[in-house]
Length: 333
Image (cartoon, rainbow, N blue to C red; front, side, top):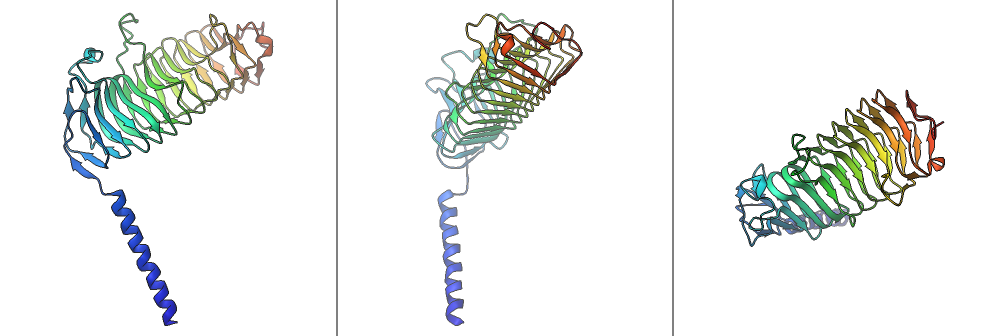
């Protein structure tokens, strides 16, 4: 019995020792003043604002394999939003590179790109961003969650000088990223969803031109709320996207699939359980679409039509069990 007790004690001591070694390797965060152009490689809590970084710095702060907790502080690229294209000021507010880099709990102001993710398995959360492009995702397996993004676009401009840029840009090379629970307002595109196998979920998007532009393939776009978009709530020009349980309210148009002027149609997309209500023109419209499955959606009180199919290949599209009041009977039975 005594020998077994000693064995158990030794295992416990080794376990505690191993935990202490792991804790020491991870390291408690350091509290630090950070200057323009620094690269953060250890977990850091920011203790200062970083304002108006000038050339030669392309970024204000770069994070590699560590967590930057901004603790409510502000990073600012320039004094005025109009200076974001000036080559004399920093282009990126926060740049996440490598693997497992994180930024959280801070503010980014007056940058061409507020936060950019390059690499894999990054996190950007609880950030308040005012920028030309809010967050650019050129990464794999990363999460962008719980951020508030405010752009420069204004309906008063309509829109000769305002930038045609997205709140969140998911690049064509991005894979398996999650864009969740963000509030996005006053961007030309709320989310430009390129790449493949990304998930765009539970975001609130308003006051722009297009809420979500699905230009990539095999993406999931679900449970988003899109309000007051000047042109289209959700526009799908890629293929094999799953668009489900979104709602578009009080925009010009609800859901569009394909573009009439494009040579190639959008193919094999699914629209299911979406809601298009009180929009200024069309609730759900297939413009140039092939083998689109439109099922169990509801479209009511849209000013011109609730459902419309203008695609030259409209005979290949399937309209199943949708709720609506008005529709174009030529292709929709």
